Amino acid sequence: MQGRTFHRIDRFLPSSQTCSERWIVDGPKPLHVRTWTCSGRGTEHDRDVNASRIVLAAGRKLARAREAES
Image (cartoon, rainbow, N blue to C red; front, side, top):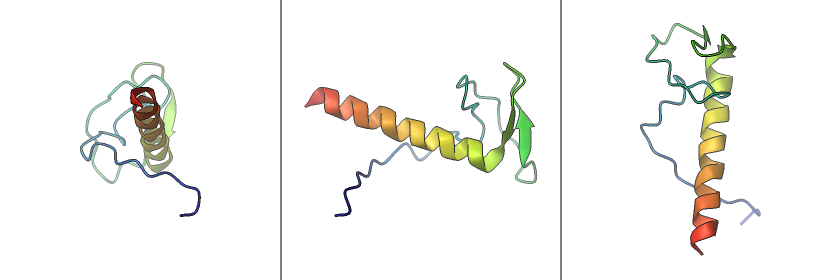
């Protein structure tokens, strides 16, 4: 309607536990932890910003996969 495309990603994607640079799942964290450091590279992440990057990347990956199918 507004020139946007919507893709539904997996509900259980561990977006706030995954490093947006290396895609390493670091494990669950309590909700009061707002920043965390990736164990793979040592990158510090803001929990919400990092999760939004993971969700965006997952949606784009899904979109590319659907384009390749058609």
